[in-house]
Image (cartoon, rainbow, N blue to C red; front, side):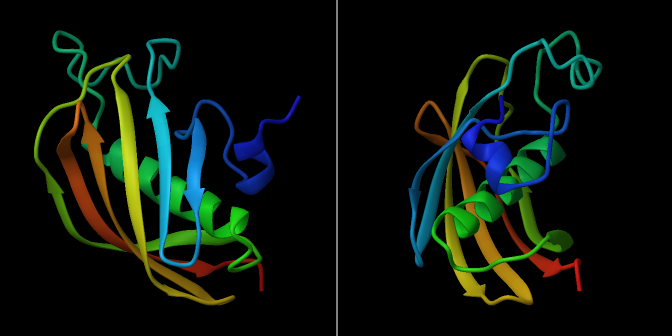
Length: 138
């Protein structure tokens, strides 16, 4: 059975890094993800510390942004990550911690989506980035 997120974006396990969208509107998107060790693809990164790889957090933010844009009905089509800018990792995140993403829509059209986001764990920022996605199904 397809989840709400799977109806919004094409990603599937083991590359689906978003659990749910809480808010989706023209200004912001808020989503949640908790990683667990069932995704063996991730467990080889920092295995002694149980850290989620930082680039996975950025991918997860982009997935949150894309799913939120679709949920809010702001753009249609298939979009792919084209560039990342101002990526900063502030703190490690471990498995089973709830990660909250707050995404800001900078520009949204049916051709491109520019967003910025901050990932939070336990109320503290752990990663921030700005990225651009372009429509790839035309």
